[in-house]
Length: 378
Ligand SMILES: Cc1ncc(COP(=O)(O)O)c(C=O)c1O
Image (tube, rainbow, N blue to C red; front, side, top):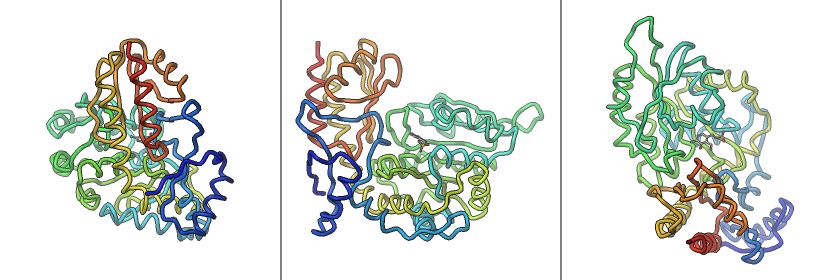
């Protein structure tokens, strides 16, 4: 992939102009990023959600064929849904504005009020979706203490409630791949298989929060199409490592997706000519998956440096695009030091920092980050 550093790219209009040039010269997969000199360099490692659409993606969005999706008439959305479902070996899909919405719709589809779901205690569905499990589905949550967020069939089985009117009915297990709070670590499909077998045996649904499933697939080399064999539902985000400005898809069987359409409407997520957004999703699936290894390589380089910093007390082993590390002083102290050098990151705990690499972080910016990390040695 060709990358250019162009100082005057600041607005969407700039990107649009460059996109026209890109189109004229038919340079395939041009990636443009803006940075001036090193002192003014901004490296945004807070999340992979901060990416901006590339010229190629904007081009795909402008030329999308659209219609009213609430009537099922947006052909670009229909294409994205069919494409995503087929990729994961699922029957059908629904395009939603966010991963929170696809997860919450999945939970509602797979449970009844008064049921219970099982998830790891770090799960996004529990920690970062505003209490939506209780609010939207009137379901309680049984939390497990997984290893970096990874839960196994052996851990799940004893937590399944017996049929007894005192206990909520266990109807759903939710896994997250990659595990955000675990530091982007992955389940291999082989690890998921026993959980899927247990769930099938006990008539429990299995949902995957696959916000970063393509990062997991890049690391594990598992096949997306095999996921459909194990999960009843899968949520896939297009707006994280894949770089789309918005959007997630929920994948399941036809009947579940039919009900999910009703739920999305109830939640106010029925969109009209949103094919412009779906076009970004299609572009992301076609073009941005294969470059994820670059983000993983960047996270590995940061990990190597962090392991040699005397102000860092522990580093979680990197598998994908997330670095989580512990610090001597409070995280806020280092975040301030990093911010002074243009590096944005987030605290994951009082003495814990998270970096996330993504398509808008270029090798020069990784080198700058490495230099700054080393300069903080005491
Ligand atoms: C693991 C995981 N699941 C779900 C989501 C929710 O996605 P969204 O921000 O699109 O609601 C996120 C967001 O960062 C996430 O990290």
